[in-house]
Each structure stands twice: as C-alpha cells, then as structure tokens.
Length: 182
Image (cartoon, rainbow, N blue to C red; front, side, top):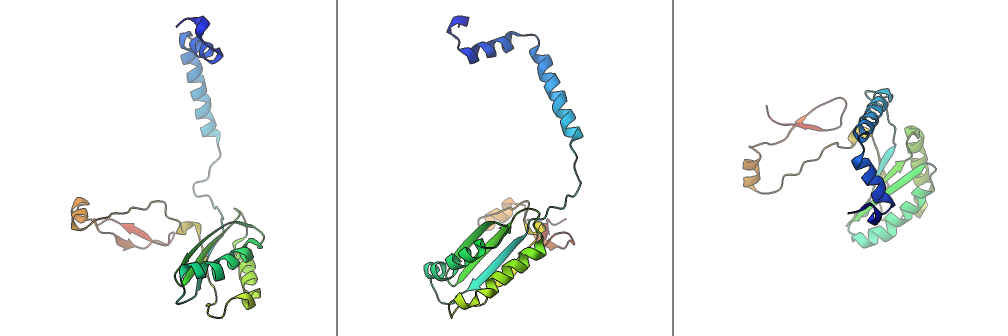
C-alpha cells in the first residue's frame, strides 16, 4: 500500500512502525508506568466504610406481585427519602420483601442505621395490617464474598472435584469461610 492511499491515522501508524525510536518510546512509557505504580500510596488493609443494610419484611400467604405493590414499592419510596442513600436493591418473593440499602462511601454507619430505623418506625402507620415489622440487619464489607464457586450436578460432580466438600472454618475477620479438606 502506498503512502498516498493512507489516511491520517494510517500515516501516523506507518511512521511509528518504520521508526527506530518506537521501542525506546515504549520502554520509556513502561518505566514511567512502573514508577507511577511504585510511587502510588497504598495501605495493606484499607478501612473502607460502605454502610449497607438489609431490610426483611414478611407478608405471609401473599403472592409476590401483591408483596411488591403493597410492601416493596412503598418501602422503596420511603428509603429514597433518607439522606446519603446511594442505591436500593429490592426483591419481592411470595410472602417476603427484601431490600438492600447502600449508602455512599464514607457515611457514618451508625448514623445511617439510626436514620433508616427512624424513617421506617415513623411510618409504621402506613404498613398494611398483615405485615410483620421490618427486620433490619446491617452488613459489613467483610460479608461480601470475594469468590463464589458453584458445583452443579449429581454424584459425578463430587467425583470430578476429587471428593471435595466444603467444611466451615472460623475466622475473626470474616463472617463465613470455607476450606478444602487437608
């Protein structure tokens, strides 16, 4: 292909391909990147505070659609009124509504729990008669799994995994951990 048929980007690419300085430029950029990574301050165990709260509400004997209309949607509207709320994830199942409220990073966890509890309790008169009081469970960043494995199948999957079955192992820094048999 001739130089005349190339567009502007093609001419720039061709000049880098033909240049003897290209390897030096690549090495210089790699050294600058390595220097930036080395100079970047980091902490071994940073304390990231992301308040997350689970809210469980039961409405026994009711279909998921009605739970959504009578419990989940009104509860979501109330939760969005709380200052500092970043996201709300909700699920409606037959007889149960669950919402996960996530606050902005750095929000004080205790204040977030108090604001949420206060908002829900001040609106208890709006809850339908057959609904249980909300169960509020704070979450910790350590409750979020870093790896989830799912083995699916019958006895053949146990054989394929070498007979591995998880056994609980306790740890003071995590809510639940599993280890393979030694």
